[in-house]
Length: 337
Ligand code: PHE
Image (cartoon, rainbow, N blue to C red; front, side, top):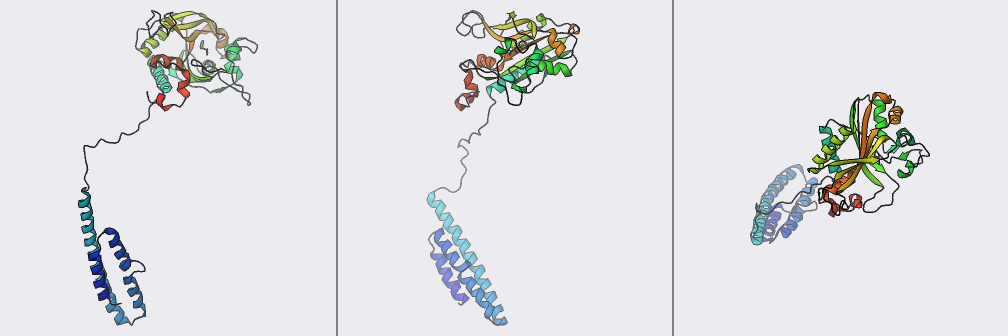
């Protein structure tokens, strides 16, 4: 077909296109792969050279002319469209931004971190140990022989590989003393497991924090001062600590550690069951057999150890009444922290 004719037809169709969709159709008709201009170009192949050159350059001219027409018409149609919609692209700076979703630390991680900070500031090193533990470290080395009734207290999950899930973080007293010469101060936070029916205050999995301080002369009075100082800072309140005799095979003497009630301050309320005190930890002076089992000479050293549950502290700090909420995965609970 004659390029001039194509040019005229196309020009007319472009100017008559009343929207972008139609214009696109016209574009395809002339410039598409099977379009009119291409088919003329193809026909050049069968022509003599001079003719080919002449027609070729004519087609190129037509092409660039039509391109221009298309572009002009397209921007004209776009402008019309925008005006009709009454919204030329504008940025409304007063529209509130989208709030980025940021995660938060799990309440147990927060409490664990805070405990670590406080003890670190008092010169304690943070160490960790395995959750799969041997009977030796979890029991025997801690002066709990096979037939000792105390094992009932720490009933646990026995694994097929001969190990067990540790019931407390105390095995790390042995593990650490085996490899480190006192004087030493450590805390050992970590998950422990117990064969336990769950209820609002019991879980079969919890996080404990063990503490151990060994030196030449270390007394229960030192322990009381440190633990009281810790709780004062943790609750940011004037907390008092109370030690009463208790039994744990790996300490002698052993203590039950209570703190003055964080809710009523000791007057007596429903949280402390009207006693004014809340039991929070087990503790005691390190037993000579524990020193021996860790390869130290008992007469050379003195020390104390304690262990408490992170969940208990978190529940008191944030007034949480069901321990099962921590691992419920319920975002309504977690988003409050
Ligand atoms: N390991 C003990 C428990 O889990 C707590 C404890 C630690 C007691 C250290 C005394 C000394 O109950």
